Image (tube, rainbow, N blue to C red; front, side):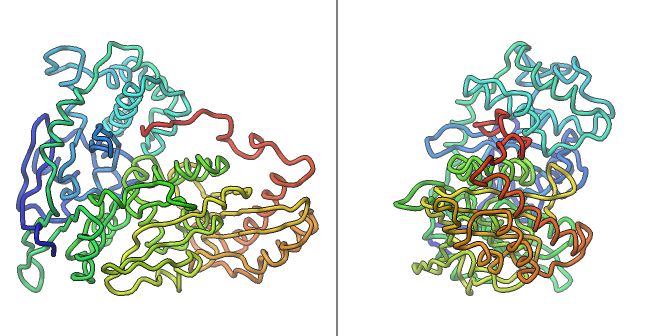
Length: 516
């Protein structure tokens, strides 16, 4: 542990003031704390696994320039200690922001008033979460002097499930709220509070817990620098690393797992950066998925589909690309795209950093090359990879917010009409995400024709023997994997390639450039 870390309570901005919390378990969720400790019942529990959005709240943090950044997240899988130094906004806070100077009972914020006027609620259970997603969009667009398109609002609500109202009136409300009398958050007051909350060193939050073996103390560590993280990780190799808790949160809520001591990477500013460093795009392992995907799509717009269909906005705000990669799930959507882009991972232990190609990182099902005391520091993507034709495909039962049956990342470089280089990476086809080496070999150096593609499709059968599960059968997976090769050819063939709008429902639609 670093010398600056000492046990201390949690401190965050909530309800218009700085609150201090102590004695609450390290895996106590924000949702449970709100409902059971604060008796604030507006934030609902639905799925309790980050899928339905009934528990949506908005978190505020200071960005690298010291400005307030607002992002929606799922309160049901966010552990309360992750709020340290941040601002928490719930549906109960909106009355104070209503156009009425005093707010008070019955006062409605434009996001709420618009839902009333547009008949955007029936049973009302999902409504508070929807309102908070709309409020986040409202504040962020006002801050940028813009208004969202209807499609941007639909993207914003991808993580909010409404079973009875239907989304047409909800989208109407999302547009209507900008026509009502303005009600802005006093951002400078929040910024001042957040600056006052900044810690000089790492957080060590301790909470007692009674287990079958007796009482013990769990620790939640939140280092603030890479060096502190490396030192702590080396000293506590058995502690669980925590980023967005979009996976670990389910271990606790659904599997009732004991995760022990936690090391939270969300306060390590350098690991949250996404920037060009020399000839690579450097994606810090703690960078939110939304930021990482935005950086990829800016350089390869054809990846828009995968970005917008990756989970939901609240999940992408909380979860990290580093966590998605380190998790090692064979159905993680980041790895196939990154493999197609020749990505590598930076692995750190103490002061030593080694670089490993992502294709060599996965050893077996849910097993990776990390050594004891080592952690994933960053993902690097060669900028030269974006010169290729890059495409990503996600196949799932639901269009939004669903786990992939198959996810594919493909990159192609032609020399005239001959395949000069090709990368075909698939998730959902084996125990790990991996490249289709036989299919690549069948294409490399060959003319980019339908006949060559057919040979590669046949070769896929030797690359993969996919399993059958609740998402898809083995035969379906193989056929779809082959069909995606055909789709790639139709989009990139030298003669009469299909226009982007013929293969993507998103192409041509304006999408958010600010976080909603």
